[in-house]
Image (tube, rainbow, N blue to C red):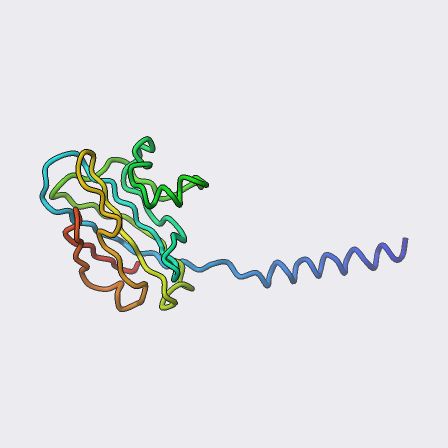
Length: 162
């Protein structure tokens, strides 16, 4: 019995030390304003993803458009998301139409900055084009400032740290 009273506190202390050694991933919050080009047709679905140094999807940061039945049409992202279908906290309501803008809050893992990761914006509009890399840039402090031009439905994106 005495041995049990010696072992249990030692195990509890070891467990607490182990838990306190695990550092949570720090995320930096940014306001992200997306301005679309003028076009006619349905609203655009916009996916914002963190891309790893090997060019693969690491994490979905934001989804503009909540009708999940259309997600499979965003084919490159769907290959990543569709297999696992993890919960995404940052899913917005309606899509945004041509000429409109939307402001979202995204969280970017601080530990990924300057380590070869990229931020990718994909856009798709029903019965129109799908742009896998409407906008993509290296994840660095310098690149998170200023205006970035899109190549598809996105006119530009601005990010501002909160």
